[in-house]
Every structure is written in structure tokens, then in C-alpha cells.
Length: 296
Image 1 (cartoon, rainbow, N blue to C red):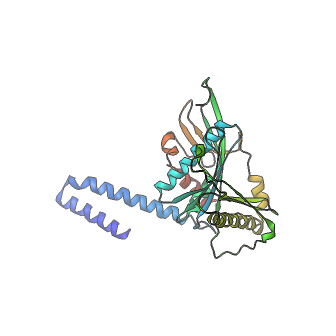
Image 2 (tube, rainbow, N blue to C red):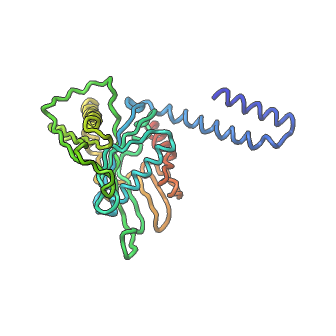
Image 3 (cartoon, one colour):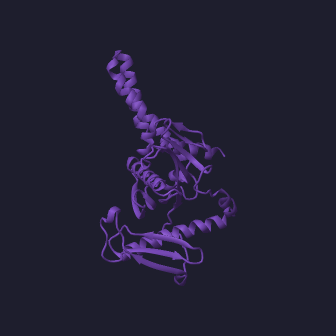
């Protein structure tokens, strides 16, 4: 960053000495780039939590409401996939349950990259959509809900002791929407930790062994999160903070009708550019959350 700053200063000095306006556009571009780098460093400095630097696992669930809510959950999933693409994160859909006719009932996404959990923990909670339903022949306005739950991924340095006798392992056939890529053998794996009723599933790999290994890794992450909650004596507060996927519990509202607005109810940050947000432009919302979080 120092080299970039020195380069910009030299451009300014040359432009002043030569009284040359042709440098203005390039100087503005360099300063814009510098400002973005400073903001990135500023934001990264807020990520000092225990697991902020880890990869993470994101779970998306449709709320009540059938096709309408399932379509919204699908839109939310696309939004995060686009965010990951724009910010150089590897986004892997490891498990997905298609909706009844449209959308998805649930999805699990593995997010790999620097400080993935630190950034995406800002997205934990219920997301509310208000729009004219494309599934309503009377063109009425509908409100839909989807929940997002993000946990840090456990790395190999953390020991999680699991008794094999406490596990139930089920296999099933995996496939995509509309029956695409349906396997003829049961390669998908679902593992249930019976004492805690914690479930992890994976169907993204071609072999049952690979899916089992991935599901076990996700299960360890979930059990690790449970253990952290116990160790820090925050379990009661977390339970109180868990909200039903319904009216009044949302962290963010996405309004497409009668006006355009996305508003985060925790920070009051908002924008009228709903299309950009649905295309993955979430960094201002994440930054606002982290700024407020770091102040508390």
C-alpha cells in the first residue's frame, strides 16, 4: 500500500508542476483504489474474534409459506453465491433439498477463503421479502421469510471426540433440480449425532466415501459450535436470541413493492438498489454490522 501511495503522490506532484489536467483521471482512479484498500484494512482489523479467520458453513432454510418461501430461499442462496464470486471465495453447495415445484427448502454451502466466517457471521438471522408474488394469479403482495445460519468450520488442529456409537449414518440418492444428475447409487450421506440431534449431510461429491468425510467434517463443526456455546456460558442467551422464521423476527427486509428498499434492522443501513443487493452487493451491510459490533 505504501508503494501505491507514493506512486499517487508522484503523479500529483508531476501534474501540479506541469499544470497538466490529463493526469486527473488516473489520479482519481488511484485514490479510489487506495481508499478501497484502506477500507479493507480497516474492516479486517475488526475481525479479531476467535474463529473469524476460519472457513465457514452457511445453512439456508425456507420459512413457512410453501412455494413462495422456497423461492425466496433460492433467491437468498443465489445472492450469497454471487457475493462469494465477487469477493473471491470458493462457494460449494454440499447439500440441497429442492422445493415443491420451485425454489429450495434448504441448502448447505461451504465457504472457503480468508476470514469467511468473520464476514458472513453478519448474515446470521431471518431475512424477510415483500413483493408481488409471481405465483399469485391475482398479483397480490406477499411476505416471505428465510433463515440463514453461519458457523465456523473446524480445522484439523481442533480435537472433537465423537463416539461412533452415537452416530446414525444414512445414505440416499443425490440429484439436482428436476431430477438432473440423479445418481443410480446412494452416494449422498446424512450423519446424525444422536445425543444432540445434530445433523450434517453432503451430496456434492461423486463417491459415498467423499460425501461421508465431508459430512463428518461439517458435523464436527456443528458440535464444536455447541461446545463453544457451553464453554462461554452463552447458550441461554443464544437460545433467547434464536428467532422463529416469521414476522417481527427479521434482521433484514428486502422490499420490492410498493417501493424498492433493503434495510438492515440491526444497523439501519439501507439502500434502494435492490437489484445490486440480490446480485451479491452485500459488503456495505456487512461493514455496517461489523462497525456496530466492534463498538459494543
